[in-house]
Length: 322
Image (cartoon, rainbow, N blue to C red; front, side, top):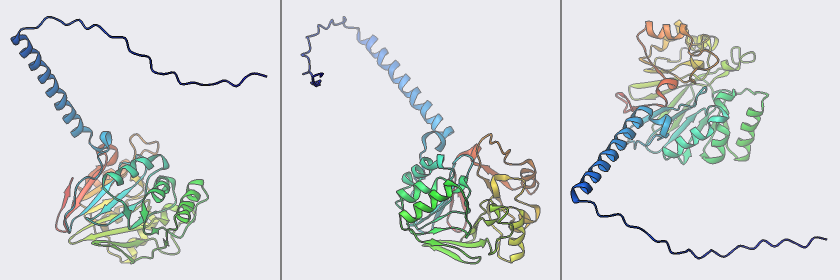
């Protein structure tokens, strides 16, 4: 039988004195030149960091939404989550998160919320059950206080959706199934539910057409968030009589050719179109047909794969890029 091995921490060894050989003193002129060179190199380094920071912005440093909002201001942040979608709407004292990207984007979303000082979300909106919209929300529901989850009345047989439902149950979060024309209010944030209706047009064959579509109204300014709504749901929205006209359109389904039809663009008539997507994605988003429609109408195009996180501030009278 082998004896038990004893692991004994060895006491620190006493350091032997080290003889330091001093170099001869340099002249004062030489020392001044050396200090000047070091100062120049230091300033050059600082300048380089500043340039890289301004060029790379959120994508490199993940600086987050650090702007302090005044009363009456709302900021909309289209978070760069790669091939997916996540949007934070916040005022000085309330916040709503729409979607959370893929599960792999969870840290990006959580870091953005933390950097923005968000400790509580009044609502989390899961536009529809696809993983590139709800994958990152599971972590959010477990880390941030959430007042309620707003989601469509559809299901999806995937582990991502099951994990999402489990997170709702484990954190005892109320679930709200919205109806068209409902108004979701969080302080000065007012979101009008535009879609989907019940039953959803084509939703059983295509969950994109079960997407919750929301219109943010703030004074004279407005934003339309469309999830992955495709042409069938766009047609229903046009025929519903619900106001669609908005200054900013979050382009449906990441710029897929099955969304953002001619008639829908005519109804919304936006000044700016935001496309949330990943660089060099395998789907070929945004489709040239969609970008051509936007360019023909002289609608400004902003893309998260090119600009990174896109932030817009509204005071109710104007919309400012941040």
